[in-house]
Each structure stands twice: as C-alpha cells, then as structure tokens.
Length: 198
Image (tube, rainbow, N blue to C red; front, side, top):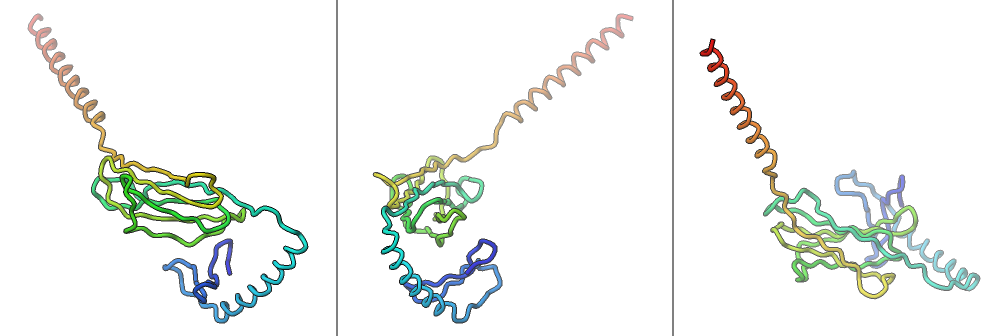
C-alpha cells in the first residue's frame, strides 16, 4: 500500500506479518486485515503468473545492473564520529549483498541496511550505512554483489581526507597589513622631511 509514490505498508510473507514502512517520526497507521488480504492477492498472482508463463513463454529474466555511490553523511572532521552511506540504485531484481571494509579488513560492526525501495522505472534502490570515526589516511570500501554484475562485484572506495583550514587568507592578510604599515611609515618620514626642508 502506498500514497503519493511512497510505500506505507507491505506484507512480509517470510515472517508472516504486515510491515508499516513509514519512518519512525510519522504518525502510526494501522491496516487491520491487510496481511490476510495480501495472502489472498498472492494466490491470485500465482495463478495469473502460471497462466502467463504458459501463454507468453518468457525468455530471459530482466536484469538491471546497480549503480553504486559512497559518501559521508556529515562534513568530515578528524576524530569526530560520522556515518558513511553506500547508495545502491537502479538494480533489478532484489536482492543485493553489500559488504564494508576498512583498510582492506572486513567490517561487520556498526553497519545497517535499509529496506528495498522501488524507483519510478521499476528498478530498486537500497542504502547501507557504516558508523565510523575518521582518521587521516583510512580507506573504506563498499562492495555490492548482484546477479546482474558480470565477473567481480562492484567496489567503491572512500578515503578519509580531512580538510584543514587554509593558511592562505591569514598570510595574505599579514602581508597586506605589513605593507600598509610600511607605507604609513614611509609617508610619515617623507612628510616630516618635506616640512623640515621648508
């Protein structure tokens, strides 16, 4: 069930329960009997699928390769806790497998995964996050495995690059101030010398 392109609820047939997919800050909404309704729709879908397979004789399964990006949630500050986000989008069908590494060592703690979200074109998107504390020189990677990817899984890397404040503006200001003071001193010297000559 959805509204305005956003999913509000789905039936989880593995756990045998209904799942409200609204964010935690949204007002709770109940769907009494929705799971049972979903079970009935599943049976109808299975029958329709069997008929369609006989009639249309499908050939190859559609596969869409995921597009992966990795970025930090907040601006990176040395030794300040942050979150890395691995965004995987444009893939079909689910599932995808995501793994994290730090300096080529597998990381499993402080990771989380989101639910699959459907894009308007029928593909899916998905987030995996890793809580971390940046230290200069650390290299993190997010590896995505999906049956549409030929050969090796996709891996995106992210290197901790802490931006230190630039000294350029301070140097420029200091040089300007020094030249200004020299100009005032030279002007005063010539003014006094000119007055003494008269």
